[in-house]
Length: 149
Image 1 (cartoon, rainbow, N blue to C red):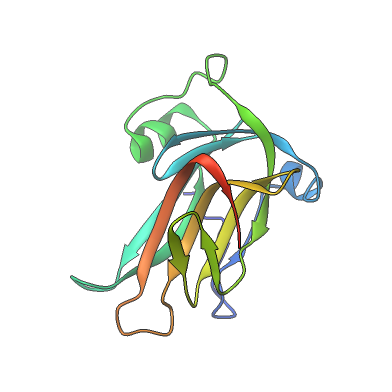
Image 2: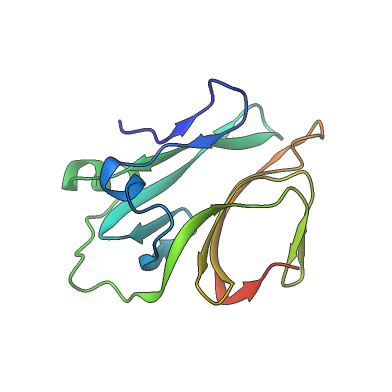
């Protein structure tokens, strides 16, 4: 498993592969594959949920599915990167704690957004309502993209 979230300090700090880490402030080709998977810079990622109990859940990790076996295990299919429909190049940014995106309000959010150079968010993942007894795992594309307000 290639877990890319470090929870050692309590907050979910994102760990990225070296080839992405060296380009953190750069924008990379992005495509959403599903509610819990995306491609960034030719790398396939799966956003993994960790349910605490029946009604509580949170972001457990971001898995880098760097080969066909990992893709089949996590996504249920193998991604053909030559046929992926990319949208605007995006970069991963830490999301604000409180924000609105379209008609959705995120409060006490710990997570990340994939955002393009014009400020449009195309994917969001993390844990919402972290201050509540019932936190909520969040992972989904924003179609069409929206701006944080």
